[in-house]
Image 1 (cartoon, one colour):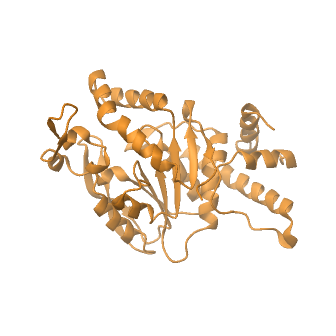
Image 2 (image 1 turned 120 degrees about the horizontal axis):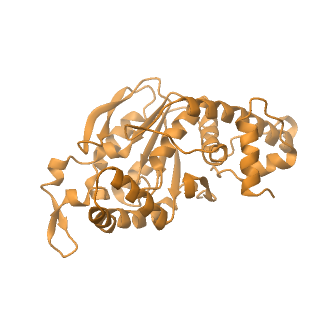
Image 3 (image 1 turned 180 degrees about the vertical axis):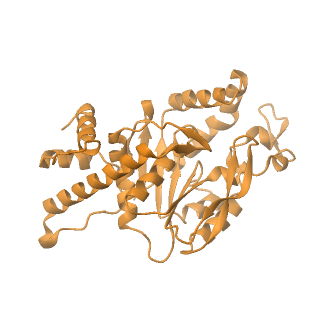
Amino acid sequence: MLTEEQLGALARSLICSDAPRQPSAEQEQALLACQARLPAPVAARAEGGDEAAASADAVDKMLSQSREAWRNIQAAPSFVDGIEMNLLLSPLDLWCALAPVAAWAEANEPADHRGIVGVAGPPGVGKSAYAVLLKLTMESFGCGPVVYLPMDGYHFENSLLDIHFAPGPAGTPLPLREFKGIPETFDAVTLLEDLTRARERGAELHLPAYNRVSHDPVPGAIPVSSQARWIILEGNFLLLDEEKWRRVGDLLDLSVGIDASDALLRLRLEERFRRGGRDPVWVHRHWQRVDGPNAERVRASTERAQVRLRSGLNWALRPDAAPAA
């Protein structure tokens, strides 16, 4: 059994090296064991039912594709929420959490519709960064073109939230904008309609984005071309077991759930909001009203994800559990 440090060194030597060596049989098994579990095998059996040969071939192919993905990720500017960011990613993160999902998508592309991968998790867990990196990885694995669709574009407009109310902490009605980010502030009906159309193979349409300056949706800002083969849908509530959201979840070909401790979520959200100019009082109030309750609500739903990941320090991503049945 290899340690985390040994696995990290092995991944670097096999993925980042210009002249990678062939891993031993023991190392191949260790590499496969540390990957996220998928709901269906991605490797076909070798002729004659030689499972060892099939496993070695699968590792060789995935390592080759992972090297291509690593080069592309390093070369491409990464934009999260419209902001160019230097995303933290190690070769082991790529191998454990991104490569197996991309390999699954390559091997399981639907024949009768455009595929959709859903990425769900509580606020601050790193969904957006994961989805951006997954898009690059899937395209490196031959799944492209891939469209990244953040669910934030389906927020109701602020003008609408300002005239609808919900009980505040003391029971006093407050505008829904004060609770922006809870499920009720999203237009799940339009999201479902758009996903149903986008799922049609060859369909061309424009979907909404979200403006982080005006904090309002921008209609038609994300184009989906007829050539697009996969959509990565990212958002908190994709797997909620509630009527409107359950129908959204039913359209996903694969669901990925990411979780982290509340302490880590709060730390990341505080940093994010401080960068956006929010004061500590606002940050604390927003956790109490929105992000804290959302984290509890979403955490229960992500237990139903087919692929479960856990985000740790330095945004490290590792498998959290076996896939849901």
